[in-house]
Length: 610
Image (cartoon, rainbow, N blue to C red; front, top):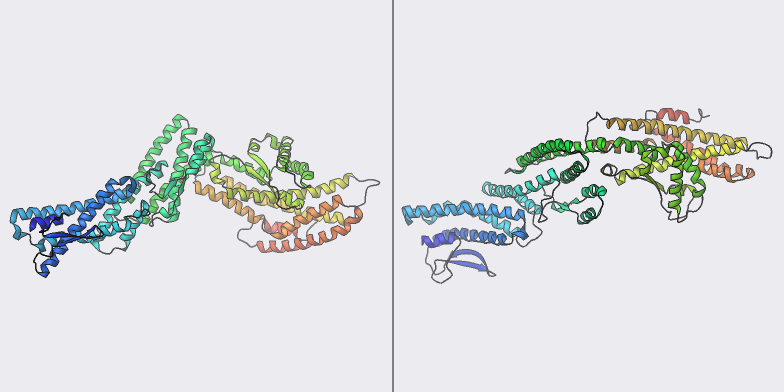
């Protein structure tokens, strides 16, 4: 009997009649082992022996599954292989226990190994096999549960488990799978290499971008390389927060960017020095990840600290690349000069040359025409000698509906070709904010230019025969010009220049920071300028539009009709001016307002206006 019982525990029973044990099948598949019905045993003994041989049946089921997945390992992937290896180690311990029982039988005889002894010797494997079989049923035949999703499944079972033996088993399986995760994570964070032949990691290669990279020029390869990988939200393990997953994506992208830049930009000697430092950092990174990943009990807080440490290091390297190697400060100066209209002489000429063209309905050639005016204005001003001007281009978007001159100018925008990796900092959203400021300041410049143009035209046309302009109209023009000049000075000197100086100080040669610091500084600069320049205050926009209407009437109407048409414009201007003034009083105590705002309010007070 012992030999047949031991064979059943090993997973083998006879397939002919007269055997002590038989296999119970369901739908042609093995379910369990039990005593043959024709064998005479006491009920208590039959229950005990059936329970013992059912453990052997489970070991057979698990062993068959391991063999099957070994034959299809190319389909299962590395995580399934790690899980299989973990289950095989559990089976190996079980077979070792059976070997001990067999040795005892050989040394002491059958009386020394009764069924109760056999069960007590292997009963800890009963719950382990049930757990392993439960895992197999969860993942078998389900292609969705693979890779890091399989890691999530084991982790969730581990979190819900309260039986010490089962928990220890799950920890072993989790450890085996985390060794695969550690290798993939280390490869990605250190070198930006995705070691994932079975598409199991939560970061995958973007095939569209990869194709573009292979077809693009070397100058664009760094940019496309950054976006060559993307995050798979549904593959992120449940124990890794989404914010942390994005940080891991950033680590690999930055590793690729820094590696590509070192190969293409740094001299051989400097490259050798940096690679030595890089090798040391990569070794430290690997050891840190190994210490936190290859443990039986995963600790999220420790894992986050390690990732944050690596993130900070990569971020500092990117900061150095942006601020020193890529001449960030020169590009920010250029953005101020052209997007925030600090090149006053250039924009003065551009507006004068483009006024007639922009006053007419746009043609199909509007983009080409305005680009030509833009280039011609640069040739005749200081912008022509500026190396940064070659990175600037003006664009005109054809309006969907016919509008006024104001609306036509609102379709004008700038593009700045700063190259990679600066595009990583100046994202599409950042450039949209810069263009919002550009359109606003361009409107201010137009108003200022037109008001001065009205004065110059009629001043130079003085003499006999020239029309006499009523004094009250000149007073209106002077009031408008005064308000606009005060606003322009406040925006450019007290807001833009002040915050630009603060921004540049953060990027000085002796300052230390990281990529997040640079990104936050640029965003803070834009948000502060947008707020303190009152871009979202409708009364200010109406004031400027009233000024433009005034200039349009002044230049295009006869003197007799001026007074009648300008009167409602003046009333609207004064109404919006009062409303704007009241709003500024509310801004005065705001936390984010400029320290110079009280002086602007004082100068705009009607009682103090010239």
